[in-house]
Length: 169
Image (cartoon, rainbow, N blue to C red):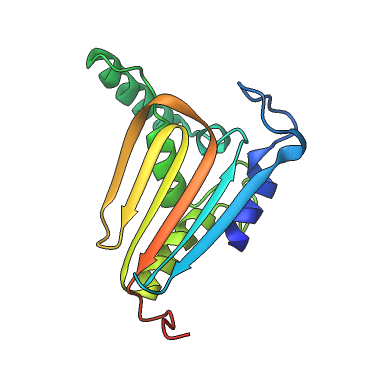
């Protein structure tokens, strides 16, 4: 949860960016969690109305070329071109952020590390910009473009039947 809060603080509301829609005042964000002992499931959701992960990912030339090719492929298939889903996936793979500061840009991958270490069945979903990212406990990643923009970033994880959770209390 700390990581989600830090990500909002460091990245969601950059001073030099203007969102494409009116966000809530005062750079608001929301966080919630739940525990269901009967289903042996815990979950967590964080949401902000900031600029989104794709807007804060620094682009490198080679990545830009790949993104243009992916967008062209989507356009030829009749879909609105976007590479936001690839940028979200890249945020996990590269571990870097807009700030390029040491120690930042690792937060998204920390969610996966936590879920893998906890055991059980887990999933992590991120919606941001026009991209969707889904990670499952079996290590499968699925990235897809969204037909419409998701304004802000939603991070949701769910953990079921984890031996790391004391279900008796």
